[in-house]
Image (cartoon, rainbow, N blue to C red; front, side):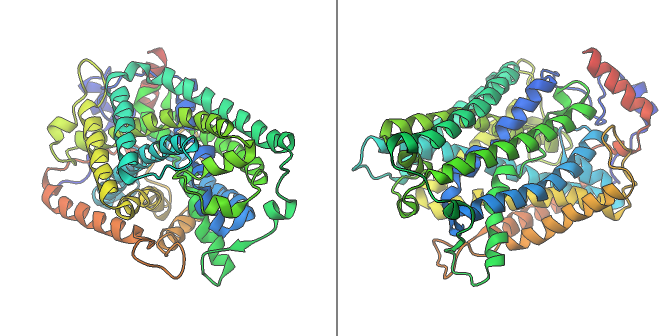
Length: 522
C-alpha cells in the first residue's frame, strides 16, 4: 500500500540541513529574488482585473446590459474576497510554491494524498489554460489593432494563431531565460496597469464630450436591465453573468506560487493577495463606469467585426481610429506582462507536482536549471502545451474556447479542495500563521467561500444562452469532467510512487521562525 503523506518533524528537517529547508518543508532550490513590492506588482499585473473585465465586456453585456456588468462584478468580487481571505490564511500557515496542492494535502488529513493530487492537477491545468487564454487575448488585440486601419479586413483563425504563437513564445522565453529580471518586469507591469487604467479612464470620460458625441444615459448604465440570454429568470441571468467577473478577479492564489522566492513569505504573500484583490476591484470598477458611459451604439459593440470588442468601444469613445489604437496599445503592454506572469505561475505549479513525483517524467520536469535558477523544463512543457492548444484554435475556435473557458471552474475546484477539508476538520490540521482568522470569523468566511464555490461550479456549467447549438454550447463540464477522469487514471498508475508534499502543518514554531530568519537575512 502507498504511504501516508510525508510527515516531517521539525528536528528531522533541521538535522538534515537547516540552511536549505524552507517553511514548506522542501529544500530551498529557488533564489529569493522578489521583494514585497515586486510580488505585489506581479500579483496586480497578472491579476489584470480591469483589462480582463474589458476584454469580456461584450459577453457580459448579454447578461443584464451595462448595469449587469457593474453589479455582477461587485457581487463576484465580494465572493472572491472570502475565497482570497481563506487562501491568504493558508498561505500564511504554509508558504509553499505548491499553493492549493500543498494545502489540500495537509488540510484533508488521512485523505490528503488523494485530495492534494486532484487539487494540484486542477490548479496546474487551470494556469496552463489561463496562459493560453492570455495569449489568445493578446493575439486578438493585435489582429483588432490591424483591423482598425483596414476597414475591409476580415480576421481569419490563422491570423490569430500566428500572433498567438509569437506572443506565447515571447512570453515563455522571457520566463525561461530572464528569471532574474522577472521582479523588474513585474514592477514595470504594475506601473503600466495603474498608469494605463488612469489614462483610459480619463480618455473615456473626456473624449465623448470633446467630440460632441455625448454619453450614455444614467439609466442605460445603472438601471436598464437587458436580458439577452434567452433565460426567463433574471436572477439566474445575474448569477450566471458573474462568470465574466470571476475571470477577472478569480486568481487569488497566484502570488502563493512565488512563496519560495520571497523573504518572509508567511507575511508577504497575504499582503500581496490583499493588494491584488483590493486594487483589482477598485481599478476594475472605476474603469467600467466611464467605459460603459462612452458607448453610444450598443448594437455596434455587440455586432462588431473586431475579434476584440474593446476596439469598437474605444473607437466610439475617442471618435478616431488612432485614438482607439492608442487605448488598445495601453491595454496591450500590461497584458503582455500579464501573460509572462501566467507562464511564470504555470511553470511553477507543474514543477511542484514534479518534485513530489506526481507529474510525468518527474525527474526531468522537477529539475531546477543550474544556470537560470528556475523550473526551466516545467515551464518549457507549459509553453508546448499552450502551443498545442493554439493548433486546436485553427481547427475549431469552439473547441479552443471550451478548454480555456474551463479555467475558472478548474481553479475554483482546486481552491475548494483545499478550503473545504480545512473547514470540515475544524481548521485543526494547520498551525496558524501570522494572518489567521480567529474564532468564529474563520469558520464563517471559510463556509461562505465554500458555499459560493460549490454553487457556482454547477451554475457555470449551464449554456451561456438559449436556445443553444453546438457552436455556442458551454462545454466546461465536459472538459473539466474529462480532464478529471484522466487525472484519476493517472493517480491509479502513479500512486505507489507518489510521495506528496511534506505535511508541514505539524511542524513546530521553531522551524517556521528559523525559516523566517533565514529568508529575512537573505
